[in-house]
Amino acid sequence: MDTTWKELEKSYNEENSKLKRVLRKRMLSYIKILNKRRLSKITKGKKSLIKEILGSKMHFDIDMDDGLSRYLVIKDIREDYITETMISELHKGDIVVDIGANVGYYALLEAKIVGYKGKVYAIEPVPESVELLRENVQLNKYSNIEIDQMAIGDKTGVASMYVGNWLNRSQMKDLDIYKQELLEHEISTVISTLDDFLENKPFPNIIRMDVEGYEYNVIKGMKRILEKKRPLSLFMEFHFRLLGIDKCQELLRMLKTTGFEITEATYEKDEKCITHNNFIENIASYLNSKCRNIPFPGHLKISIDDILSNAVIWKNKEGALDLCLRLGTLEILFKRR
Image (cartoon, rainbow, N blue to C red):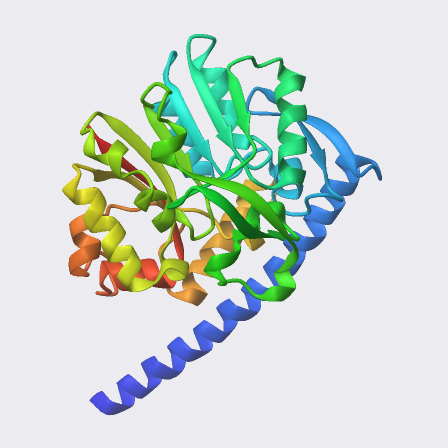
């Protein structure tokens, strides 16, 4: 009898899982149609437009950047949860270093909040992104943003990088972690350590980085900053899967020994689920989480020790590091008080 019940339960779960996968597939197809219609309605056939995002004007070129620009035109916001955290962490007069500023989504938000007494160093190596970033700074007449066309890493000199079909997916060449078909062309860029870049600049209150798996190299190049033991907020798009276990653990140990702790970690919604209709977006995100057996997007309660020890933090009794690797990427705020 017990065996029969278990077999029935297994059969039910399998059928239920198939149904969720079918619903997810149809929902994602519907979102594609919705987004195409909304993009057409907003752009009216034009490939370039100016739109206000979080209080700042942004120029979007859909032909030049089919990734981030497309989603911001459709949704008006990206990475909802960590954006909310960023807004709460920024204060007037703050000094911010934005590494991988792209076309300025975060840099413009930072400049608006820190005001004329603050400063934002927007660092971006991709020429196409820098072009749009400059336009966006000029559109808003922000005088507190310094744009530096370069990369940040663990060396100073010249480096090669691949520019992606989606500009925000561009990566340093020596990582060699993305499929070639996603990358458009190769460029050379000036590269510096963050220690050298900030040598004669004020110590920052906040460092934000989104460097597509290069965060290990960036942290390795800011040893003097870490050793100063001054209060610092470090926003990082942490690419667990791209970095691999060894680099993840070394990076986390380095941050822990220099006084940092995780005060916020978010798992953002899958790009395939993103649309302007929040109800539909949430249904798609729910189905996606059920099909992949992952947490629903939002804030995760997790610590450096949890990840290093692979402690169980989720209902399916999965270890923290295992879960992070399966999720692929988390937005994390490391803070030293």
